[in-house]
Image (cartoon, each protein chain N blue to C red):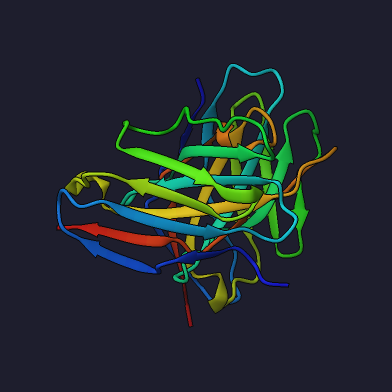
Length: 115
Length: 115
């Protein structure tokens, strides 16, 4: 009965380095979302995976950001050549899909600090 | 386009008292959904309550209730009998459907419940 997990909890990196953030959704959830939460801001949608469909990448802020979801389960968000403005909390959420309302369950996030 | 505004960056309330958090939104959608999320210091976003815009009756969940004024595009959250565990950031969000990639979040209100 585990919830959504994310790793690492905190990540400090130097400007220009690449980082990978991991999300482990709730077992059986077919939908997976990535959001970014900058300091003092609400959540900003980044990318959405639904089953085997092509992901909705409309929220990715630049081509330095990419994400994949292997086997319909674990997802990795990759930020290449990190910039200081990438510093934020990155939240992952998953949900089941079907008729009616499908609540998103969020992970605890990864706090990324780019020095 | 959707926008969500929360005009109270911070609020405080005494334990056991009632507090109301404000939210206004703008949308061109004829039907939409409104949400309140709670984010405690653990960073994990938790759905508090949701409202479907076509329903006139205000949603309630135990100590949490909303005042949905569709014409005024207002969606305030009332917390009754405030408890110390209610201390958190509260985010208002709107969505044109149930899918999170279409959610727009407000900047949040930091609520402190004082003993």
